[in-house]
Every structure is written in structure tokens, then in C-alpha cells.
Length: 169
Image 1: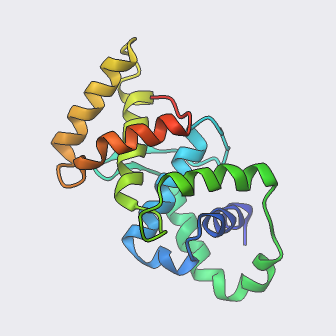
Image 2: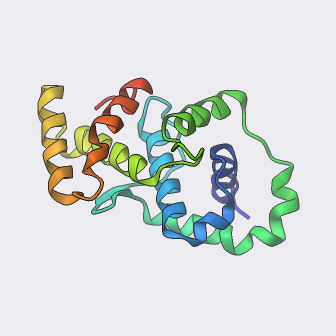
């Protein structure tokens, strides 16, 4: 098992998301968005995953492949993986992401994560040419309302969470 799979396993573990959740769409979506925010936010973790904007927000095909490889090899590698750990500051960063995006049921909210990651991508990349943050945010709001009407009600909460985490928009 490669270093990327090990890193993804450790992030999932710190997020409180079991590897088996990668079998479902929401589990893969949570992983994609959480790692995007860790890479692109103030933490600047360098997993080496490159993202593009898709309808469901920032998406990395290579992260998807890594997740599938982890899922495929997890049973055979689980004893070795159990011995691995993250540095304290990494656990703290992931814990902040987890706390910010937890639902009332104590699990990560994939819709809220998707909206927050999309706002960050739109403001930091797509609309980065606009000098004023307010203009970038307004364009991002419009894009999300148009393209994600079923989860657009998370907009203000997502913006608040990004600010709380000191992730620039």
C-alpha cells in the first residue's frame, strides 16, 4: 500500500469516517471535500491531489482512485494501518474540519461540506480575478443557487464555517 492510501486512511480515521463508507457516494464525497479543504485552506497540506470543478464541487480523479485502492486493499492491510498515526497538529486540523461540518447526528454533513468546498473553489480559482471578496462571494452564491438548488440552503452556514476555519474566500 502506497503513502497516499495510508494518508487517506489516517484522514478518514481522524474524520471519524470508516473506510467502508467509501463504498457509498456520500462517503466518497465527504473525503473529496475534506481533503480539498485541507489542501486548499490555510493548512496547505500537500497530498498532491489536483482538483477541477464538477457539478458536485471540487473533484480529484486521482483521489478517487486512491480511495478505491484503499478500499480494495484495506482488509489485508488493516493490521499494519492500525499502527500508523498522524502528528498532533494534523489531528488538530482535521478535528477542526470535523467539528465545523458535523451534523446534529455527529457525522460529517456531505451537503454542507460540498457547498463549503465549492465556495472555496469558486472564490479561490474561478472568480479569483475579481479583486473584492464580496464580489467573489456573490458570484459563488449565484453559481451555487443555479447549479446546486437542492443544497443551496447551506450557503450561509458554509460561509460561516469557512470564516470560522480561517479559510479564505
